[in-house]
Image (cartoon, rainbow, N blue to C red; front, side, top):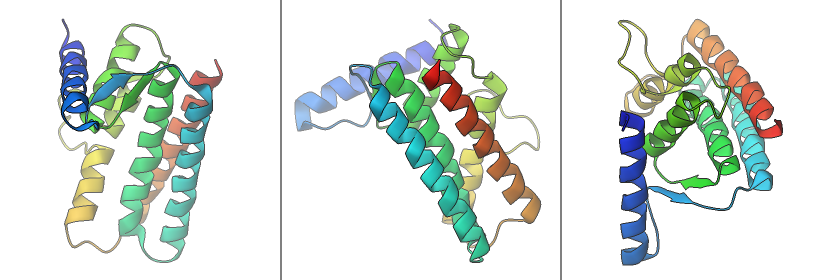
Length: 169
């Protein structure tokens, strides 16, 4: 079993246990595939991207590190919803997307996923979008450098476009 498959198995068991105990979960559950909900996640991704632009124009680019990340994360939720999953855990979502890539079920470049999240060992000097979000959310920085903002914004646009292809395919 691959690392991603082991993580998915753990996520499914975690959710099952939590649902029995509390009626809520912070893992991964199987659901009926739902294209309407997948499209709603794409709308949410586009909404977050508009907010990212709005924050940058208002000189709140530090906060846009979170909105641009969640734009991309909403895309990943759209994809897993199409495949019949609900996730309440980022690591579970990342593992499931990686598994779908590795099994050829989606045409989503592993490197694209790796730019969003830590699914493979980190390249020296290459920070993942999730790490950038965490740094700007929890540290005292008040703005993103323009080149980093532009890079993240374009990455989110690429992820949204790729997600639409997957959902519509």
